[in-house]
Image 1 (cartoon, rainbow, N blue to C red):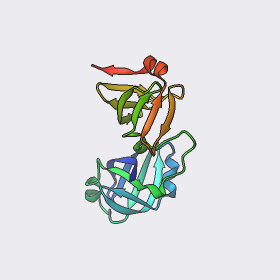
Image 2: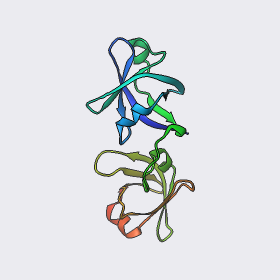
Image 3: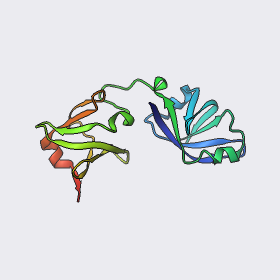
Image 4: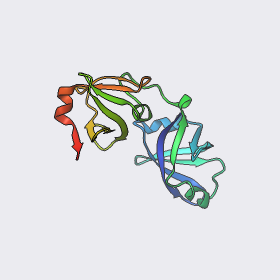
Length: 166
């Protein structure tokens, strides 16, 4: 399974360079990459640079603005084998999506359908009987097992922060 590390937001210049909104905590990781996957196709990286929080890539086979523009809106992915090792209690979003969420007293809340990264804490969206959103807070999470696709949250803490959609 590939890991999304960015979104192509525009063509840059006339020689096929693309501007990427990085979806990673450390844009310096791009410097270590030799290949990326866009729209199911693998591209060798000819050059890369970072500026003002964005990454600019020049890809082999993308040599003009028209070809670069055809990639706008697509995600930039890497093969999982090229992913960085994460610190303890840190997860790739792709591994969190699809986890079944239970309270610590065994109540099934639903399945994580989306993760939003908008501020101080990621916000998880659960689909079940109701749509529920909650922030990822250490005091809330009892355990996460991405292999088993299971998350357990503190019932008491969850009741304090969860937002239910009517």
